[in-house]
Image (cartoon, rainbow, N blue to C red; front, side):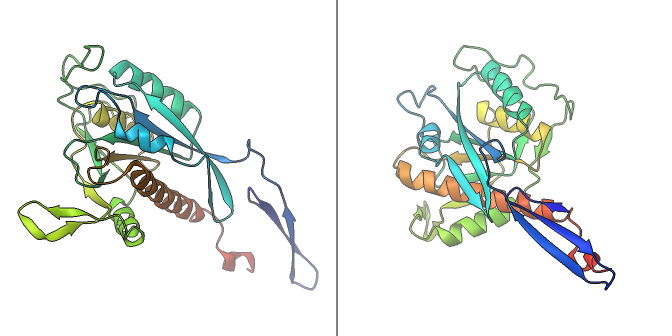
Length: 259
């Protein structure tokens, strides 16, 4: 029997050597839905009034459906403090989410940046409470003193797919290169050495194939909050597709059922 969150398929071999298939449809309760947690940051120096990351995250829907599977989208505001990040990551991953997306703001981002990796060094900038990591790095529970952790998702594929479906969200041309405009997203290897890089590092340490960090530009530079939220949602959808596809590889191939 193959059990799906929306239905079960029961295969029964008979003496005539054919297979009877019964599909039993289930309704999906909230407890059966898979969980996606999306975090955004609160204000900090340079972004005292609003943090564009949280403004965008707040606009995301509560429910996402992909191939008939329902996902609860839970939004979490994280203070710009190392201790708050430690507490948030511990609580988030204790709930065994299907996917964790961290969103932060970058004052230099020209579009939405999808980050490929996080470094474990130079965390010397004081947070909102004046704290920082004394030696600039941390000892990770699973990867020790690793200098860099990489995302296990195909970030380039995510960027390509999102840009193909966000034709209305095109950033202005890159300075000094007026012939080249940016799409809605681009891949990046510079998550930074502040709380954005730290929270990404902590989640990659837990599960690099279910973690992603997204940098959004400040509000209206160039995207409105609605546009930014739409781009982030499309990124989440691509993540869900990749995770679901990887899980399908663990299922028994159809041809094996008939042998």
